[in-house]
Amino acid sequence: MVTQNSTYNIAFSNFKSIPKIDLKEDEYCLFQYSTDRDIDHGFLQYYLEFLPKEFKAEVLKYRRWDDRYNCLFGKLMVYIGAYLFGYTSFEFEKILKDSYGKPYIPDSDFNFNISHSGNTVVCVFSKQEIGVDIEEINDIEVDLFKDVFTAVELQEIKSKGLDKFYEYWTKKESVIKAVGKGMSIPLKEIAIQENASIYDNYAWYTKSFKMNNKFCSITSKSKLKKSQEMHILF
Image 1 (tube, rainbow, N blue to C red):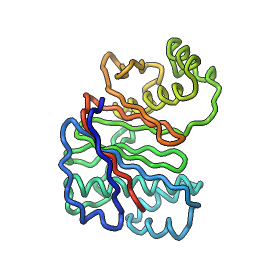
Image 2 (tube, helix red, strand yellow):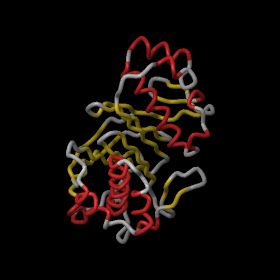
Image 3 (cartoon, rainbow, N blue to C red):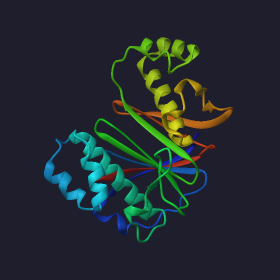
């Protein structure tokens, strides 16, 4: 799916000093943030102040601290990306949700999608429809997922092990998010092939990779040849 890539570090404290990024039609940009630090209330409170009231409430509705943490930094990644990809005066109120709950920014020339698991948040940007899913790798009982995978997929998962399960799972989830219809799409209706995932007779192009103890998949409407990876520093 991707033949060229580059990796950069971006500090939230000075991202506005970075030159704007010209996102190409055949390119995606993946932001990621991971931390092993204990969740600190003061640290979280500091970054909450960058959000308007209604967006703070959306973060604080989560009971678990790690969910609050991931929700907050996902939103701040959109803030960074919106600025770097063209907005000079970004406002959070510009982020809307469609009828399926997928966030978007009207009149922008890029799409984005967010996912998080454990201590990692990712946000992908592209000029085409795109979806991302990340999942922490844990032991599972494969037979409990017969309604998710086809018989052929289950056979391959049982043959190749846990990584293959999470590769297929995140691919299917990222397709759902790229299509933008939420869980109204049964996962079993998405057929995984070598470099594409088929849904409703249309091929969505997928890339999967491991990030420490997690599996991440990115799905796009057409093939992407280049990528940029940004490690966000909060």
